[in-house]
Length: 559
Image (cartoon, rainbow, N blue to C red):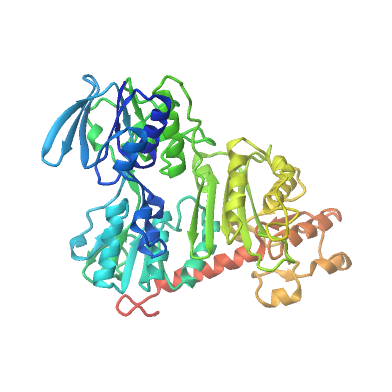
């Protein structure tokens, strides 16, 4: 059996290694357009930032080592230009040489290419994208040679923010420009407020709801006419499947150029498989076809394709987009669906936002994490989760990823027996706490309302803040009165039981306790999810957005 694999890195190299372990007699050829067969593309921003200092550390396997270990014919700088499925051939260009190569089985792992729009004046500045090792070296060498003082990062996804962090760590003044209303597409706006505030706290200028319409040698011009100073530019506005070479192959492609595959990673053409960033796969929550360009799914798919090439018929059960990002000392992690997608699809859901410490409160060094969990209202089945915080976020998102993957409910979260010692967690882990709160909502014990509903509170309703007077002195929501939780029972006569009561506290816990007291005394109540802490984050974010909008386009000072 002769197998040609188009593309290396996680998908292609993983397929080749698994196939060799299955079949010592197979003839395996990897056609890689670049110089490198297997490299740590997730680590590329950290080489730019000086965290990774050894060039060799980025290259996981050389062609020579891969050939020696797996007996694979690795052909670098060999670009597949076209595929002829009828004749079972590929046309390959190596330098100035063109040739045709036959195959028995073909595996497509071309990956995705950064989007580089035709922006007027783009040639006037030093503009870079980051996809591979040569891109990394180009950015690093430019920084060393030219010593830029400022950089505009266009796009605030994972790579964009990781690049912003690493450039700022090198002393470069960084501005981040994002066309959407918030950073990081996998999270929702209510969770982005904390991220926005943290980005600004690191001295990074943040422009939201803005796109770059032009460039010159001094910077980028936004659609509102503002100019952002930049001696260099990083384009990080997304990727698209790198599949132009398949145009006339007969292999079915989607509207975005993605390769369409079935559950066995088979394309529409016989004996042709595809995997990695260039394919669409089934989302485990919605069942819809989605593009999820992540390393972990690509590695799993490589193993499956390596088996299926040998007749094992293993299924790929779908992806859920579990991902995590470090940004200075902040961690942002997601899994499953987000609220914006569920709304667009018209799917019934509910949400809670809980705030928990990473470890026991009495043990020093704990950090708070904000956990947003989406669930089916009737059953409490977990649909997705987003976590923003410090240490311990990685552990909790992995628990939530399993909950999403295996269809668990809030009651399963309550029953999870998770590792506990004071340096690592609390006896009620943040995952357990999310389960308890969701269970209270499902069972009708906690009736929530949200910060986006504040302007919908009836004028006749009572707005009640149950924090301490000292806490309230630091800030309150407009129209709220303060009766501390611990004196609420004694002051019930100050409240009119005929009026609805909307309650807040700092994070939602005391608000729930107040709700239980009031409900059992005949009041109709709603508790603010996330509490004043989330409201305060939102207000600070909105004020900062307004301040940026009021900047003088000439000098950068506030008007």
